[in-house]
Amino acid sequence: MLAEFIDQICQELEIPPPKPNEEKVFTFSLNKEIQVFLKDLDPGVSMQANICPCPPGKREDLFIYLMRANLLGQGTGGSRIGLGGDEKFLTLSLGLPYEMNYQTFKENLEDFVNYLIYWQSEVAKFEKEKAVL
Image (cartoon, rainbow, N blue to C red; front, side, top):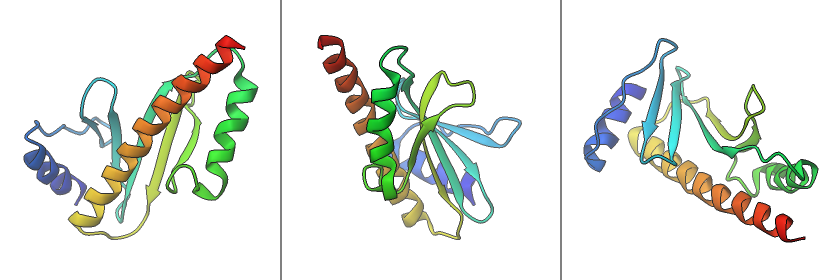
């Protein structure tokens, strides 16, 4: 199911479709800054992306800010902001463990990418403001 959806959206966007890695994860790239890792949950799909490298300083303030966004999924559209396993990247994750059609997949992917772009800019803004203080 996921491979078919990815092929279809890549045709619409006129980009080459990604091939799955050995763990059956597709790396869907729109550009250098926007890469979404898609995995078939059978049923459903999992989406994950790196927002940015985790800033070294003022982490506590940033984490509090991000956890407020996570509260009930209000600031993330139902996604979750967290840390990657190696704690080097802030990540955005979304699990949709149910059957879906192509239109639902496309809308969810579009929303996920929009939240990813938003949080990339918000974290950059937050870092800039904290550097001034």
